Image 1 (cartoon, rainbow, N blue to C red):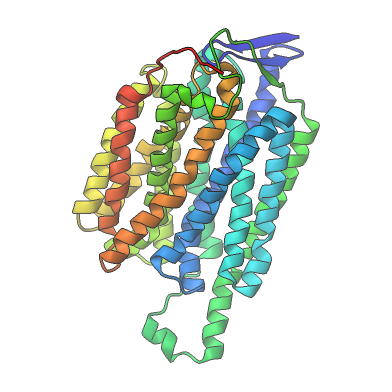
Image 2 (cartoon, rainbow, N blue to C red; image 1 turned 30 degrees about the vertical axis):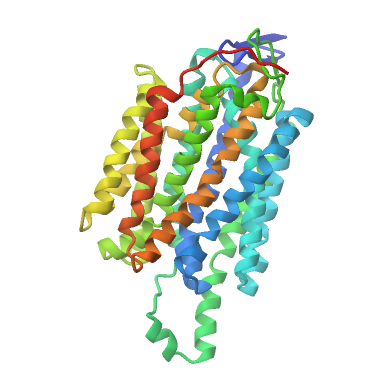
Length: 435
């Protein structure tokens, strides 16, 4: 049996052969990054789509984000407990099946055009995603040469970026109809015509989510039959013994949790209102706006690959700080600018946000040893920012008479905190941990 040790986290991956045995597990883990990226980026299409199909206002439409990210908050502790009790492989299979079940529930939700049922399905999907992210993020970081943990996590997360490009294209071609009517036109329709139109809009989500559910079950079967090396702790650093609240004595983790809260909130704010901003500010129809969101996804993916390369030459904390400065400046353009170039600024945000989540995650669990699993739960739980901050942004938009631009002040403020984390907050201050 060979052991590969991560000297920073103090974890060891066990395998019966050489390091080459990590190739297939790493490929499968990378598939998970793509799959949950599909779920999140389809939400960016669902928000304007269900706003139309279910006749919602801005704040009601952001409950889509709330349902998913509230699940992250509520499920993070159970997910961490599941990891400790059942290990990575069984937890991943459970997460995939839960994700698939939520996707299947889109069929009755669409048939009844019940927004509450859509939210329930999204909450279940969020629970599955929580388990997957709690397991896969630290697993990708540990699975291989310890010197490349951050680079490896960014590489896996690059396929999350691929999903950010693919999902809007799927949305444009299979979910969004391109049919939009003004309130006056809707009022002029007969009740039968209006209901037929709205039902058709709601039903368009069924096929993509049925296919997604089928793929998830297939991947779960693959995980069942593949040997995944388990990970155990060999750290000599003081830990809290895996205590859930004790890990917050690590200051760099606490700051990382806050940074992740603001990052996820910022990212969801940017993408949730991207299509409506492209329609309002750029004058595009919803299908064209979705293609521009696909351009954002392409730049997000490109940023992940470029960032992974840059991490060979620039420290992860420094690159995080540089990207945060540029992202804040681009948000400033979105707030103060005018014309279609505002959309290009929002698209460019994809490139500079790309490395933030995995980099904050890797910096947050650095040197934690036995505390890595509960720390991962905290970092995943911090994704609750995606439930709270878009609602705050929607409130700003509603108070500004449905003008989208002022709302982008919210992600701008988030990037300023991430800048602080990249400059100061990530630094480890080791201290004895008492029981």
